[in-house]
Image (tube, rainbow, N blue to C red; front, side, top):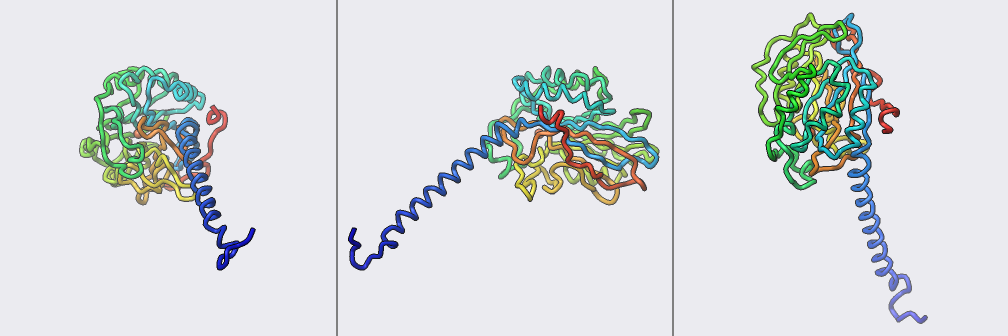
Length: 333
Ligand SMILES: [Fe+2]
């Protein structure tokens, strides 16, 4: 075919080729986005895992304690897979269960939570509530978790009193603005908790005072790990604070981690164990559920955590080497 004068064959084909490249790139990007959203909402959100962490926080000379940390179920009655997975957790045989709140996402979900806890309710348990025990979720833009994370939208009141009654009837202790000393496996645990700081319901002054240094474990509980609460527990000499709320960031970038914590905690602490101050350790659960209006997880599997607390060499310690070990017997379910 003759080429018009003044126009080379390459130049005549370039616009069409460029258009094809742009079109193909856009299709690949759109396809990747659709696949990523499908994975995050349908697969990873239901890929429950038990993470094992060893933390040397106990008073020197103490025997190990196995603590199962549960948080952020955001339960709805139809979530049978989640409920079956939770029922199976008793096989891990913990010495103590700690539930850091956000159990509910539906006004009729209390029986589902109680039945899912099953045999764990026969194990000594401690709990504090979060905003999603008191109030139901409200429709919102699914991206608001990332771009407007701290905006609080609370829906209809939830029957937290019924959940509290069911837990306490089985012997679990509501640690909301309460200090208690309990014996777990022959060891003294001195524990205190606050109401949810995310709803500004925390009144630390009601539990303020030095932690009992004679205890094998001094433990602080809060649903949301706001800095003001962590600083108060640290100043009072607590060895360990356990919290939930962050959902681990929900969307984590590979090689980078969480972008948000939905509170004033640094995103690098969005899940797992970290040191707070010179002596205290913090453990934040990535949680087990999500809001029904932000139903996705990416690089942030829903988790329960089995903490093996062991004696610190000198009254405080570093996070153990078994962090982030999942157990396929449960995680595969
Ligand atoms: Fe939550």
